[in-house]
Structure formats: C-alpha cells, structure tokens
Image (cartoon, rainbow, N blue to C red; front, side, top):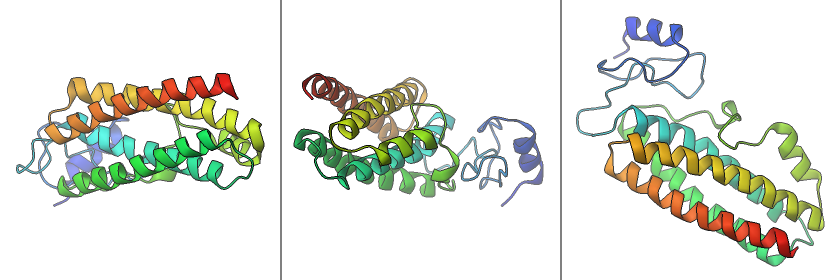
Length: 198
C-alpha cells in the first residue's frame, strides 16, 4: 500500500532509503526513476535485506548493464585483439546472470527495478561522450579505450561492492558483493596486463 506521508518525505529528501521503519510497498519517487524505495527501508519481513542491500542491487543493476553495453559495442567491431574480445565475452557472461539475480531480489523485496538509462553517473559509470568514443573507435584504439574504460568501471563496481560487504545484511547480497570484488579485481589486473601488451 502506498503511504502518502512516506511518498512526500521521500520526495523532500534527496537521498533514498532514509525512511527507516516505514513498512509496506515502496512509494513512487519521481526524482529518481526506478529508485522507488524511498519509503521501504524495511523490505518485507520474510527477508533480512536492509537499506544497504537494496541500494547495492538498485545501483549495481544499471552498472552491470552498462558494462554489458560496453562489451557488446567492442564485440561488434572487427580487428580487435582476441584476448580483449575474450574478456568482453567473459564480462557479459558473468554480469547478465547477476543482473537477473539482483532483479529477482528487488522483486522479492517489493522494490521496482531501476531505470538503467537514468543512472549514468558516478561509481565508474561512463558518460554518453565516453560511450560514443568507444563506439567510434576501431582496432587497437578501440581495444585500448575499452580496457581503460572498463578498468575505471570495474573500480567503481568494487567500491560499491565493498560498501555492501561492510553495511549489507542479506547473506546472498553480501556473498554476491564478495564475488564481484574478487572477480573484478582479477579482471582489472588482467586488463592492466593487456594494456601493456597491445
């Protein structure tokens, strides 16, 4: 049930998840499409998810979606070093199932999935100009640009995941965050090595 007071407070405050203790489904939050959890600091009682868990899933979904978009852009090009294309394929294969998992969690918690087009900011996210630069690049230039962009992107994901590890309470979400840190730190090291070899 929508709570008018919670909806008003959520619109007044500029951050999400500040209405601790409110119950029921999340109200609409017009300022941040897809982030409709201003009044749902307490997800359904059948879960043990807290605000940090909800924020982690809500922010990581569009973050992963952009990584897949970047990878797909690279994979559409000819003349790219096969080691870089293999990495792009690995990123897509790993992150789409994670998106599906986190989307399921938000559904279970009564939270609307985020609008992936509304959150291209911060946490290592690429700007529209960055994405156009990757789209327009070719050959080794495209490979190098992809690597440098994805290193930045992964570092943002690692920071977000570390916050979940420190503040989250849902065991599945914390476990995924730990997995993201491990996998993406390893990929950062791999990408830095590839940059030096191309």
